[in-house]
Amino acid sequence: MKVKVVRRIGRRTEFGSVSLPTSHPGAVKYRRGEWSSAPQHCQERGYHLLVFDDLLLAKRFTEDQFPGGTTVMFYCETQGIIKELPLMQGIFNYPFPGFHDMNNYFCWPKGTVMVKKVKLIREVE
Image (cartoon, rainbow, N blue to C red; front, side, top):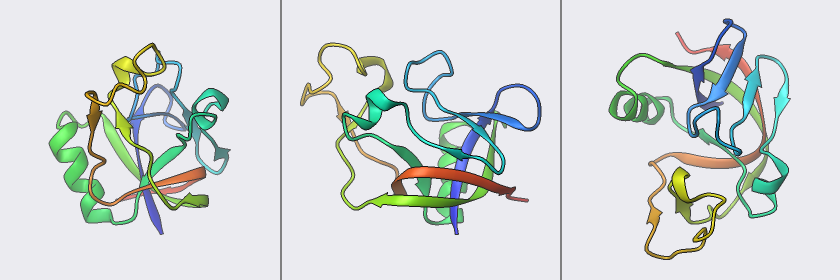
């Protein structure tokens, strides 16, 4: 089963994506038991939702990138695996001019899988 890392943004049943600030136009809100997908403008550019295929890699990622305890991990169901990941961009140049600036790319964290839909199932203990 895949693992989704999310950031709490309010009530315990509501979550926002940890990959983007919630004010960003590419942010996604997740609700347990409901399917979520990326905003249409992200999908049109080949960017969908990210999950990890390994719990240990997801834990390492959150410890390295978000040490303050603002994240939570969920086991999740997924649909529509994207076989080839697009180039990763920093959030501050998406979707603004320079979106395809070859000098502005980063590497996806190890274990990253891109999928079209995610459903949060249960919180990782």
